[in-house]
Length: 234
Image (tube, rainbow, N blue to C red):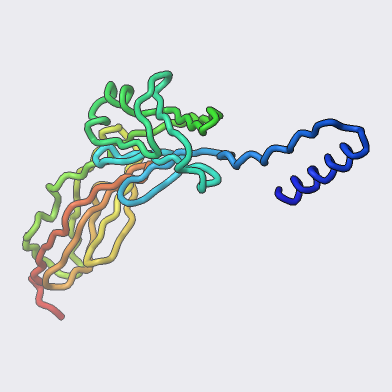
């Protein structure tokens, strides 16, 4: 820029010497850079994981909405406004959501934003609308068969019944289950009972895991049972 000013000044003096101009205007400095945000999106952080679309929150745990802008080197130079419809719910790069905000359908309607507006120092704005799915995770009863500490009689050919009860408060009809026996996992789909044989005499462990269609899970603590071979180990 200094070189340009010098050239302009020399040009002005030359023109003035020739009687063509009696005055000359200086060229102003180039304007400084202003934030140029090209895009914005919303992410969900929960269970120490940050994920994008589809945006889903487990209602049993606190979560956080995060605004991600591109390029991110301007992220601290802009303002963030979280809206529910036309009402501002909060400001800042993040928006906290606690379990109480999701305690009922009415609270969800009041406390969960659906629009993010960002604004730079020159009042230029970008906005994005989004939808948060609040998912109530499945539940599995701790009452199962065999009960913890049960002693069962038979041999390796004797079938042992494993049974449990699971449910989903969102009435999700697609719960899938995993039966883990002695550290080995068996996918059993929607079944809530299954018979298994092949158990040698001694202690065995098992547990049940259930997962809904949105990926939220529940499980029971590991249980143990004992098998006594009534025919004598061979």
